[in-house]
Length: 154
Length: 219
Image (cartoon, rainbow over all chains, first blue to last red; front, top):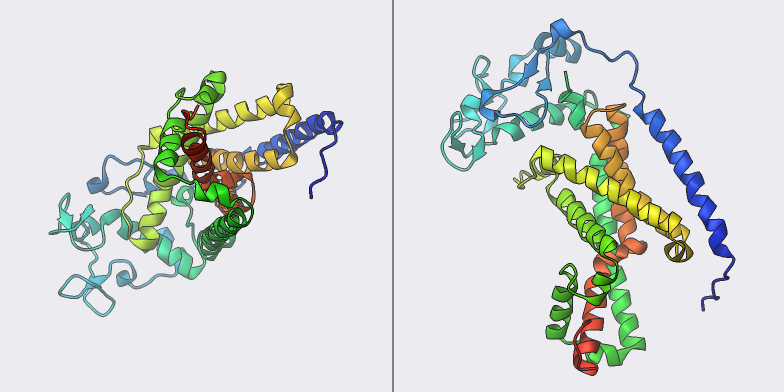
C-alpha cells in the first residue's frame, strides 16, 4: 500500500535539481580540461590512411611505425604483416607479407574476390585494421582501444 | 583508465546486456502474471486489431487529442525518441564495435548526421529539464526518479559528443560514455525508462478498451 503523497513536497524538490545541475556543470568543466603532457611531436606524425578507405569519416589513425614497434618491443615483421594459408586464412607459420599493402588482400567490402575496391571473402579492410590494432592492444593490456585513442585530430 | 575502458567494452558489456535482457523478460513476465491475477477482464478483452490501431494512431504526430494539446512537447517527444533510437542502433562508433566484436556489418549514419542528432538529443534533454524546473504543472509531478532517468540519457549523449569532437580528456570521456550507457541499459527495466518495454502494452490495453469495450475511437 502506497501512502498518499503529501502536498508540501513540490517546492523543496525545485531546489534539488539546481544543486544537481551545479555539480554536473562543475564536473563538466573538470572533464573539459585537456590532459597534460600528451602532445605528440608534429614532425614525427605518421598515419594509417589507406586510399581504399577514402573518403575517411574519422581522422586517420595515428601510427608511427618505428616508434610504435620499439615501444611495443615488436621485432618480428610477421606479428602484423602476417602470412596466410593457401585459402587465405591467417597463418603465423606462413611466409610474412611485409611490403604488401593490407588493402591488396583485404577488400573494402566482404563477399567475393580480392583487391583494392573490390569485394573479397576475407576480413574486410576496416575490420582487419581494427582487429589488428585494438585486438593486440586489448590482449597486451597496453595501447589505446577507444576511438579517439588512434583517430586523433591533428 | 585504459584497463577500465577495456573492461567496460568487454566483460561489463556482457553483464549490461544480460541484466537488460533478463531484467526486461522478468519485468514483462511478472507484470503479465499480475495482470492475470488482478485484471483478468482487461486481459480477456485484449484485441490485436484495436491494439495495433492504437499504436499506429499514437505513433503518428498530432493524430490524437493528446498530441494536439501541447504541440511543443509533441515535436520534442517525437524528435527526441527518433534521434535517440537512430543513434543507439546506427551511430558510426556503435557500428564499429559490432563489426569488431562479431564481424557484423551494421549500416551506420553519416558522421555529420550522427553529430547533429547527438546535439539535438542533448538540447531536448535541456528542454525537458527546463519544463520540470519551470512549469508548475510539470514540477509538481516531478520526483527524483525523473531526474535520474533524464541524467541516464543525457550523460551518455554529452560524453559521446565531447569524446567524438575530441574536447577534453578523450579516454576519460570515452570510458564515461560506455559506463553511463551500460548503466542506462541496466537501469532500463527497473526505472521509469521501462516505458520503452511497457508502452506497447499500455497502448494495447487502452486501444482494446476504447475499441472493444467502449466502441469508440481511440482519441
